[in-house]
Image 1 (cartoon, rainbow, N blue to C red):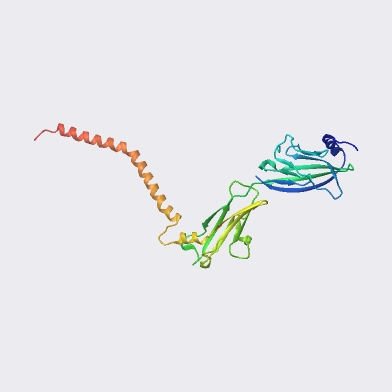
Image 2: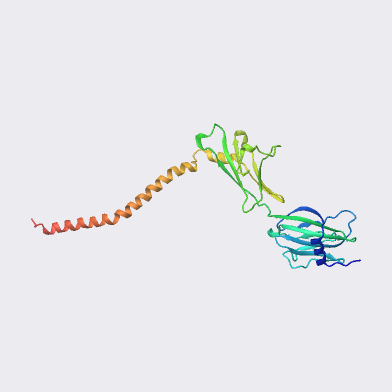
Length: 280
């Protein structure tokens, strides 16, 4: 029986055509990913070589002469485990672990099979932040209604999707016409019967999800409460007053020295006149 070394197997892989299969694997930062060495029934594996192909080509693990080996200098050193079925487990995953991998399997009859796998590592989705904006304020609102925009945002993350859910209803989706900015903003028209209705923003990626829930009618109630001015009304009063105070301060700073000097000159002239005038 011929004896193969890992390097001769790699050379054989480069020269001979192989049966190629591909698969996609997803993982989460801090978790684990299992790269399965798939082979057909009756394919009795004798040797196996796991490699990273991209972003860098590295030797990760081998199974040769019945002994597994994973202590190769690669970015996965200490994080790779070769199981008895020759599948490779990577843990804990890091954000830079995404890439392409391959496994070369050789059976006892000398037949070879190469399988490629693509690993995509995602960050865990954080809790989103939902803000409520009143679309129309004051008397411009239709009677007993409140038009709001719900804005949803998940910080410091990419590759996520946004969706909305009206709590307490069977229909989990929202009408596309009421969604904006790739689903991040939802337009809602509320009436008196919607005082207790809550809306949830759901952010997700292929490996995790999270949500935040708000009751938008509460913001409408605070906006319309008697005796409370909206932020627009406050700005209409505060901004002109601030401008007048600033102008008054600038005027006093500019004319102050000149007016003082003029006053001193007037006082000096009055003293001179009194000195020159004869006493009666």
